[in-house]
Length: 290
Image (cartoon, rainbow, N blue to C red; front, side, top):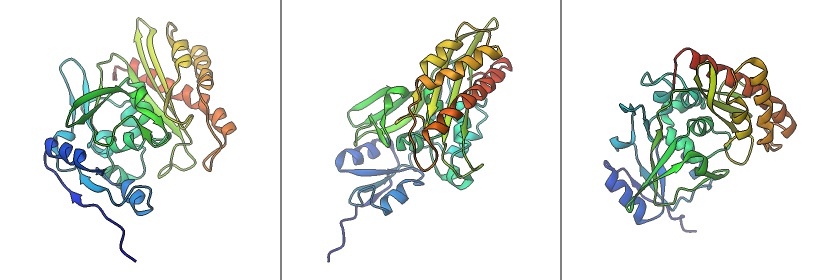
């Protein structure tokens, strides 16, 4: 019996060469490899695809804050670097990065890999939605920006085309603050049973803008507009937060699976939302804006 066709390993050192390789033939993108290695071994990813290692491309790494307050995160930035950054205060995206796997996974895994894996339970994904982030996709024909809430199309599926590469996560300037919390049965090395990210902007003691995003509560990470709208115009007192937290259930469509039941997820979500909104509020009042 002949051996199966196995693709070649490529390690470009610049973005132009990298995009050319992706355009030439089917390829699997290797950033941290924490999911790809397992998926390639079990046949989820076609072993005939080339492996294109992006770690040597410096344009894809780093965290920067522009003069206008726009935050840019390179897609190959490790989760450990993102979780520990001092460029920006703690926020929903960095909260999520700090929770992915164990420290070994965070040292290898990247924000771009976590986003493109598109797991409904991905810990950085609700933060990306709550931040109103744009995802930059590049190919040999140019670049395009996709709003985070339009990027995910199903479990493990996104709008990224095979010859495209996620290069940057771009977060607009904000006067607000955010937070992410998840529920798991273990303290570490676990996937979210449910997760909630909240973003708040406050002026003169009142909420003027809000976004709430849910993880592991639908086929993709989703915004919960009813919950966010209920916060706007309030002084974010306890009754207002409680009422808004209950409204996440208008959006949530969780399933029964090996990590939790639909009923349990719907019980936990409002509690988690209340806590996430509370932490975002504390950060906003403390001046930890992002």
